[in-house]
Length: 140
Image 1 (cartoon, one colour):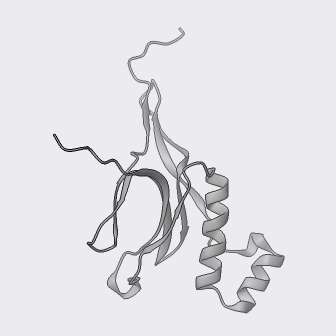
Image 2: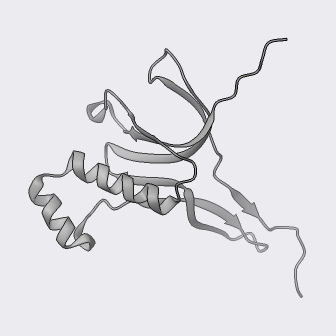
């Protein structure tokens, strides 16, 4: 039997877009240690987006007045289904999003490997959790 090779766990930071006019030729921005917190990744994403998408004047404005920045990073969302069936969305730190079109997405991935095919890496994204509390009983 051949030896099984496994890839790496990491934060994968990449560009995504919704239409070809916003396409980025090299979508992979960075591979970061899985030990980075979502706050550290969000800080990196914010700075990278600003450095690549803002004019120098905008950079200065948003450095002095961060609340004016229209494209601060946000956490993704996870779904919670309460016992009553009500669905709510809560922040999920395993996904960081920043920008409009194109925008940056940072996700935690498994089995990250290099490949000869475009974009040069393959990976498996960690699924966004869904918590379903229906049918688990409750306090009357």
